[in-house]
Length: 355
Image (cartoon, rainbow, N blue to C red; front, side, top):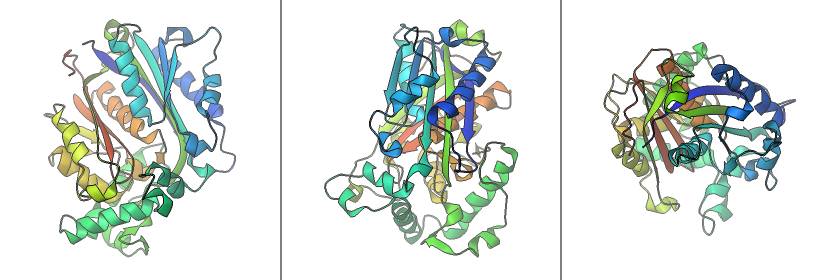
């Protein structure tokens, strides 16, 4: 296997929806930032891969418009996934493993404000018996949270503690659209939104985009003194039917964790759009109390659709680059109630042991 590292990362999360730019206007500054970080030009990128959703955009092949942000003359080697940035990164990592290219720039974008997000995401459900009922994302997360409370696995105070810590940490994140710590007691005094969820238990609807740069071997070493080497990648998915799943667990997250080495992870950026989902992931991934979770504030501080999972990987990579930690974990989810889970383990040392 080839050693591949994350060597570039840029993100933008919109504070306001009015005047929200087009996908091209969102992406061009991010590409410029990636070029500045790497010292590359467009011609140094061997492969491009994007993540987005036509359902979110409301039109077919909407991702084609985003290619204008790259420029297509001369032609580029390009692909697209109808998924989060994290899965686009996975495809790019595979492309580099083939030996066809040494570098890749992956990007994703989403304008959640273009419709009613919680309703749009109902299209991810089982299409014959679930989608016709249009259960929205927040309501399904509320059912999941209630199942865990009734089972005695967590309580509303534990959920509020996740929110309090996340929004306090988000005060140090310039990209956060929501921040500001509050006491657990004050959070619990807020009104219910989708019982047992309060609004602060739910990630904010966010427009935004992000980009990640990958490079193999010496190309990575030429960019950074401490590249964030990918030492583990693992992705699993739970059944589409909600009735066949134990909503208090995330079996696919546990399976993904079994496929990588999480020993020694110091920081974990978990993509948990709802507060109780961080509690589920901590248990399924077996993270100890000494692992710092979501120092960026996580998805509760900003959750641009189709970028937020990849942002978790980018945030983890920055901790490696800075020398703050030697091993970090980035996690991405998709689908209702943590249905799909991808883990990316990043290391300060290249081992050539990705399986």
